[in-house]
Length: 423
Ligand SMILES: C[S@@+](CC[C@H](N)C(=O)[O-])C[C@H]1O[C@@H](n2cnc3c(N)ncnc32)[C@H](O)[C@@H]1O
Image (cartoon, rainbow, N blue to C red; front, side, top):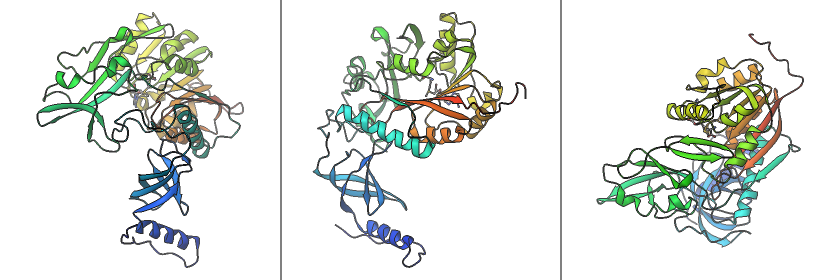
């Protein structure tokens, strides 16, 4: 172990817990390498170990691993480390199947058996939701596993020109350095098969970012426009509904789990009026339009909103209106006491303003779809006085990565006093 200069630790009271902690932090600062045992995974997929109580987060580790680690980031309350040597592997560790694992930033968990990934990720997400979201232990929870490989029908590639040659791949973890890849086993075969030939189809003045989407019948859509690559729209059948979209639009990437996701989110509830906020091309708005007399879909991206309108028209859902606006600007138009609201925001979750308006307009049933446990927990806590969480469903839409999709079904508490319509 090598020594480093000790950081200033600030004023501390002799003999207090602060003193003990300051000593531990100073000792951690003096160590470059140490041995630890990994306790568990945390939300996002890193392993957690402790040095005299101080949490240390270690990517690509497994519960039960005994590791020699190198501290790469020191903070007042925690550290980050990388693995130097696996002294004893934890249960369920395996040789990662993809040769790019470890360098490529796309996957975090290939070193764990597929079933174990789902179990550990679900436990980590639930711990975050219970701790930060103030959810009870008795809350019903379902976990839905996905096809572990060859599941992604959408991907975002990066390109670079090195010594006159074009390279295509993904950014490395926590940096924008390009890891060039000629295969990627989480992609559906139609997409993976393109990787080896793509560099030959791109030129030096081509795009630095390339979105690819495969629709039904293996049709391809790419964005931005690259000569030789198709960029038009594709069709995707989910359940008995068909959606049109192109590679510029958001769409969930796990082909096999799409029908499950839609059924879990939309459910069997029905009523007069429903609102689908952050609606994309209408994945949930279309099935909602069968259960509710009127549906309003709000989507900030103009291209996605245009496709949502077209999808509504193609299915003759005349009472489905698509509003092309940011939810933050539109939310005051939400009527008081609506039957149903679905929110599916980006990772940052709901803004304080949107949370506030949902709190006062008090829709009877609120469905929250989230890809980030931390922001979902924050928002559930803020809405907790008004809403009861009936059920959580965790879907593994992102196998081999540290992420999961969570659907929280909320219902307004019976004792809540709701403002009258128009107030
Ligand atoms: C996680 S995606 C969900 C899309 C859709 N629900 C689906 O599952 O296909 C979030 C969507 O919200 C849109 N979006 C992001 N920020 C927004 C905002 N502030 N207001 C409205 N839409 C927004 C994005 O363009 C994207 O289509």
